Length: 386
Image 1 (cartoon, rainbow, N blue to C red):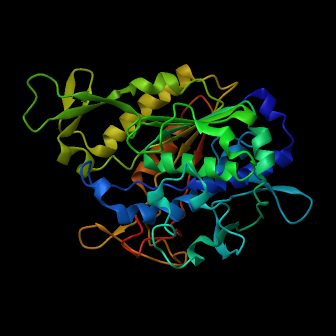
Image 2: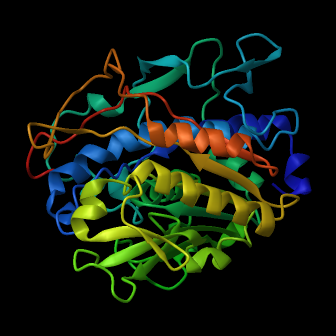
Image 3: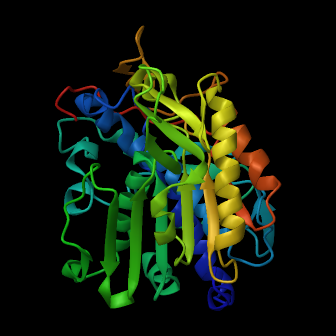
């Protein structure tokens, strides 16, 4: 982040870490296809708290990077423990513990939280699933101090880029920060847009803090394109894995830049929709998805190393989130009230591995928010909980 931010009191960053921990996983987009996704309203309810919980973990780590003693691509961060010393601690290793003071905001009172992600408002009766706090194994994370975070972010611009996971993280961050404001009308979407998944750009301004928090919908990060001339009939469109999304020019002027991608890199959203990969003028019909994702991430990495002013902008990349679909056809949602006791290997992802490997080779500092935790809450039992 900017040099000014690097000099901010450590206590503020300690508080701000919590913030990322409590917000990051508020949106999880594991979709079955362009035409099918909007129909699964039950899944929207599913995503809500599971997403919130992981987003919290990642946001905690994200802003720890801003403290200069923390290296950029690591998974342990300086956190004050129960003693007076400051020790490094892997916030991704720990467990969920009950906490009656949670959740940290009421979605029904936040105008920027989509109704589809508000399980209680949509009919869920039990509330215990929202009353869990992440406790790292070897340290304690101080409680989120919204006023300290707002002061730290005064005059800044935060940008989220990615899919609906990023969008719901963006929503949750805004809702968290609004709890520290008396004048809720001082927070508004700059273009007067309602919060929806169909808009590629959304920006919310906290006018009393001169703070702006933006979201850009770019599910692949690279440029979609029409099918080239004389392409086979099955090719309806392509992904230019060698060319970054055309809206990338709008991401640069930011203080904090948070990326995610991976959830749309599936056969159901690519090949089954007639979308194939392209490099230059060459159509790559046989290119595997993981190879294409690696090529696209290298394209993103080259862009970041060329275009981002690291004296100002801190860059983060959120790793892949495991699917919450269940059932024979993976079209239903498993409902739980407690964290899962075992990931059963579902915390492993080739997409996350690619992200980590590419970031490690980059010449500019990028922090990977490697959320490996599968202990999330599946929310939607009542069909009204959309």
